[in-house]
Length: 168
View 1 (cartoon, rainbow, N blue to C red):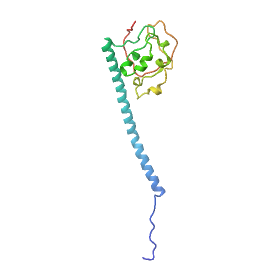
View 2: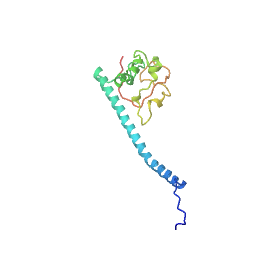
View 3: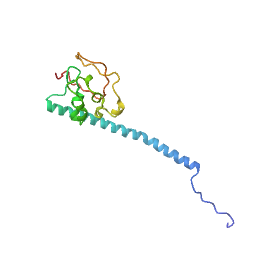
View 4: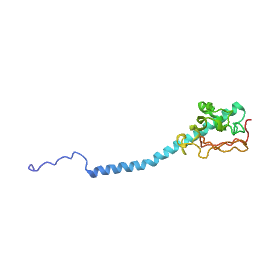
C-alpha cells in the first residue's frame, strides 16, 4: 500500500456541479416570481384605495367649507372641473394656484392644464408619469354653448358624478 500514490484533492467545482447549482437557483427564482408579482399588485391595490380615500377626504373638506360638493364645472363656459376645485385639499396647492378660475379651460396656461396629479391615478393601471395627455383633447360639457378647439389636457383614472350644478 505504501507504493500507491495518494489521491489528489479537487480544488473547485466540475462543470456539471456548476450547471446543477445554476439550474436550482433558476428554478427557485422562477418559483418566487409569481409571489413577488402578487405582492406588487397587492401594494398597488392598497395605493389605489388610498388614492380614493384621499379623493373622498378632499371632497368632504370642500363640502365642509362650501356647504356643497364641488360642481362638475366652475362655470358654464368650460370652467375648471371638480378635480381642479379639490386640489387644495389634496396637497396640490401649487398646481391649483396655476389655474385662473375666471378663465375657461382653453385659456389656461400649459402648466395648469397639462400637469398631472399623482393621486388621480391608480397604480394598478398606470402612473401619472406614464399617462401622457388626453389623445382627443377636451370633451364638451353638456349644455355648454361656448366650447373651444380640442385642447389636450392631463388625464386621471377616477371620475365622480357630481350632478349638473355649476357655479355661475
